[in-house]
Amino acid sequence: MADLSLDLCGVHFKNPIIAASGTFGFGREYDELYDIGALGGISVKGLCLGGRVGNPPSRITETPSGMLNCVGLQNPGIESFIEHDLPWLLTKDVNVIANFFGTSIDSYCAAAEAFAPTGVHMLEMNISCPNVHDGGVAFGVKPESVYEITKAVKAHSRQPLIVKLTPNVSDITENALAAQEAGADAISLINTLTGIAVDVHRRRMILANNTGGLSGPAVRPVALRMVWQCAKKVSIPIIGLGGIETGEDAAAFMLCGAKAVQVGTANFTDPFACPRIARELDAYCDAQKIANPQEIVGTLKSY
Ligand SMILES: Cc1cc2nc3c(=O)[nH]c(=O)nc-3n(C[C@H](O)[C@H](O)[C@H](O)COP(=O)(O)O)c2cc1C
Image (cartoon, rainbow, N blue to C red; front, side):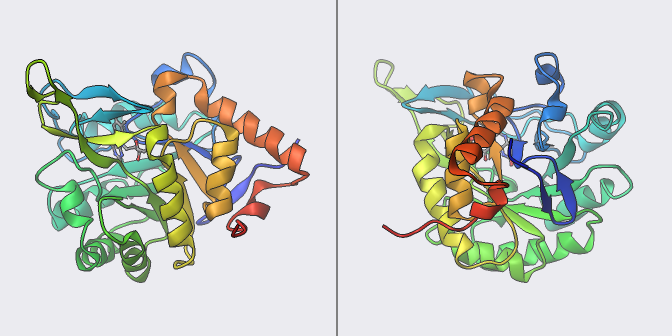
């Protein structure tokens, strides 16, 4: 058995497998199936102060090798999470990553500050949701605004700050560098790719929001490319995600430069995906005679 553990921004992880935000709720439903303490971490559903109802249906549709969603950041609010869900989560042997967003720089800062007195282990700032109009990706496209919001929020953060980047830009490395220069402790990528689905019989859009975010195996080659590009530019840790379904997929992201990975849409097709991927990564390490997968981070050879 390999040692899968790692240090991420001063936080100890037993393995590099993290459940991705928006695909794992607050972990309760999955904990009925297996002990979520088997995972390195959980990035909880994106939270804002006061909560949010999200977009009207229809909000999800299947696509070839993936799905489109426009859930629109529905959440019960940071206050409710801290009161009702976090105490339970903190009894589990798993790192809790608070994924959060706001609608202005001030509300992003206030959200980060609300977690300061709590036991959450890390913060993940979502400036990359394509499905809301008043926030989310509005701050995540231009390097100048990535810099501005990261700098402001970092000053209000007590826990290490991960900045989650959008792939819906021409050069994601500019935003990765902007986040690093502004003081981000780590970056995670990718959030979903904007797409649409067409009902040709009714000749109308399938999603009520018209556009949605594409995720799942269909986006994996794009996500791998972006992690590989960013790893050549930044020195802060990278958390890679986008279409990971197996331990070998996780290894591919690590070879490209990700220290840890997140698993999203795969949780919907296989609710046991996260612990299975951890076991498969272990088996890959044994087969490759690797003592710890951190050894392979960023070691991908060119053809
Ligand atoms: C239904 C759904 C809801 C999501 N909600 C969030 C969210 O609240 N915050 C966030 O940062 N990302 C959210 N995401 C994006 C995922 O965390 C992830 O970045 C993306 O789906 C790519 O990874 P995957 O292909 O493994 O799913 C959501 C994705 C899906 C499919």
